[in-house]
Image 1 (cartoon, rainbow, N blue to C red):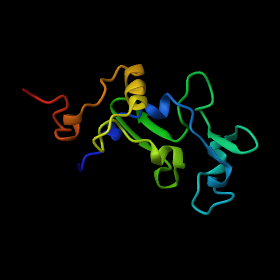
Image 2 (image 1 turned 180 degrees about the vertical axis):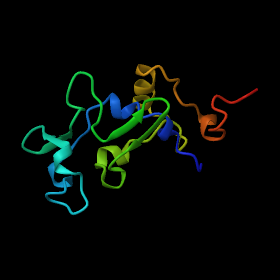
Image 3 (image 1 turned 90 degrees about the vertical axis):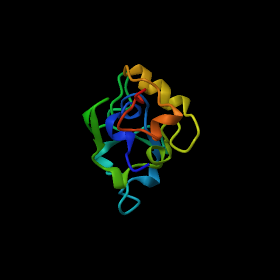
Image 4 (image 1 turned 120 degrees about the horizontal axis):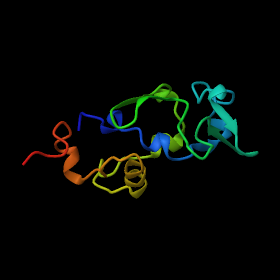
Length: 124
């Protein structure tokens, strides 16, 4: 599993709101999420800029969804991002991953996708 299929996707970063507890921000946690990339959601939570609206796209997402993407703060990303697993990466489906991919016109991942990521979809 050396290939990270998320680097050719990014759909979740442009579909869901990314909110997290305020203490994950750099103001309260050295090496945390850059405060300038967040907006206050309520007294307890922050949200990544760009994900709070009707057409979300995280401010930290760089690249072209479905082709080549990366997170500009990957090492400093919030727990909500760290905990989001793509479907079947660990032999478990993730309906939220599938929903985001479908919204961007991408096929849901399948168990064998992780066995043959370069040939996805698997050649006959």
